[in-house]
Length: 119
Image (tube, rainbow, N blue to C red; front, top):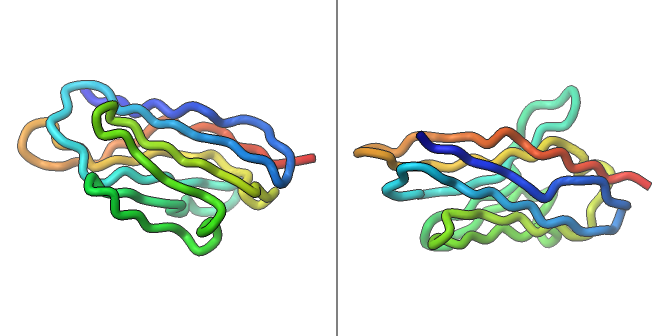
């Protein structure tokens, strides 16, 4: 069984920073792409950033130059460094990963962590 566990969310003032972590555990053969999504109240879940096992990254235009995604393959962990946070960044942030347990990659989700940007 595979689990993704996020941490690092919280309340921060506009202009502040937070660092989210997501650790994958269980019987894991390989992890391909790891991603961060977010969902604000009343809105659809949107992709924030993604990173492949080789380190290639992509970002939503709304967070590019403010957020940085990284990963530690040895620890099966992905990070999201969020700087210059804005009230519109307020959302539940979810970790997503393509994980091979036996012979094929399947998508797994974490439970989410709340990020609130407010003065």
